[in-house]
Length: 90
Image (cartoon, rainbow, N blue to C red; front, side, top):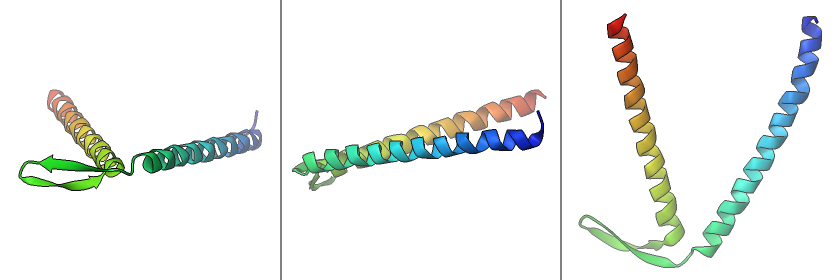
C-alpha cells in the first residue's frame, strides 16, 4: 500500500472521532445541565473558620474540581520522582 491510500483511510477515522467527541460533549453538557437544575437548593457550607450558604451543585462541582486537581498534583509528583530515580540509576 502506498502513502496516498493511508491518507484516505485516516480521514474517515478522524471524522468519526470528531462525531463521537461531539456526541460525548453534548451528553456531558446535558447531564451537567440536569444535575444543576435538580440541585439548586442552598446548603450551609463550613470550612475551617469560614461558613456560608451556597447552591448544592456549586459545592459539589467545586469539590470535584479540587479533588481532580489534588489527584493531578499527586500524579505529577509521582512521575517526577520516578523520572528522578530512573535518571539517578542510569
